[in-house]
Length: 249
Image 1 (cartoon, rainbow, N blue to C red):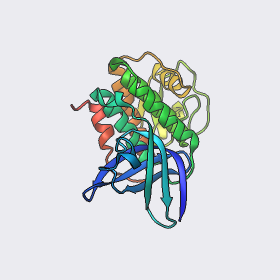
Image 2 (cartoon, rainbow, N blue to C red):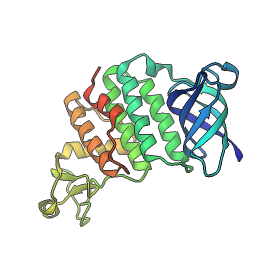
Image 3 (cartoon, one colour):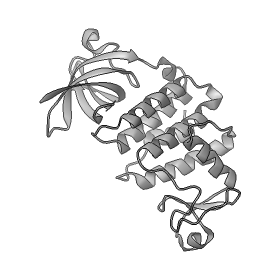
Image 4 (spheres, rainbow, N blue to C red):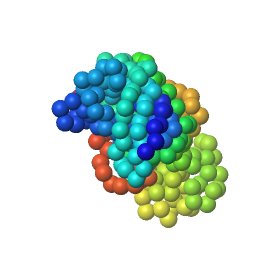
C-alpha cells in the first residue's frame, strides 16, 4: 500500500452502506480511480462538503496494488462548482463530459487531460444558458484530442490527400476523419460534413469558441456521439450523453 496525495475531481458518487460512498475520481497523478470514502455521508471534517459531484480538491488515497477499489482517507474541497447545479443544461452537459472521461481515461497519470477536464467544468459552470451546448462541444473536442482520438479534418484519413477548406467531405468515424472523394467511394458508411462544419470543429480543436446556431449544435452533438462511440472500448450506451444531446428534461 502507498499513500497518494493528488488533486482530484469527483466524477461519480453512489451510496455505500449507511454512511459511506463509492466514488470515481479523476486525479492529476493517477488517472481515474475508484475509491471508497468511509463515513463520507456523515463526516464533514474528513470529506469537506461531502465530496459532491463535480467537486474538486486535494485527495489522500491509500492505493492498494492489484486492487480496483482504493481507500479515500481525506478530501479537502477547493472548488464545488455550484453553478452546475443551478441549471439543467449545465448539469447535463457536465454529466455527459464526466461520463466520457470515465470511459476513455484509465488509471495512469494524464495531467493535461486532468487540467482540461477541470477547465472544461469551470467553463460550463460559468456559461450563459444559450451558450452552454456550443461551449461544451468545444470542451469535448479538446478532450478527444488530448486522449489521442483527434480527427483528421484537413487531409484524407485514409490516403492523406489534402481536402480543400471550401470542400464538402464525407466524415468516416471508423477511419478517424474526413475522406477524399476516391476513398469516400470505398467507405461503407460515413456522414456528409459541410465545409463550414469542418471549420467549426477546427476552431473548437484550437481552443476557440465559434458562433454556432442551435440547430447546427444538434448536428454536431450527433456527429460527436457517433465519433466517440466508434472509439470506445465497449458498446455500453452513453446514457448521460443521450440526455444532454436530446435535452430530455
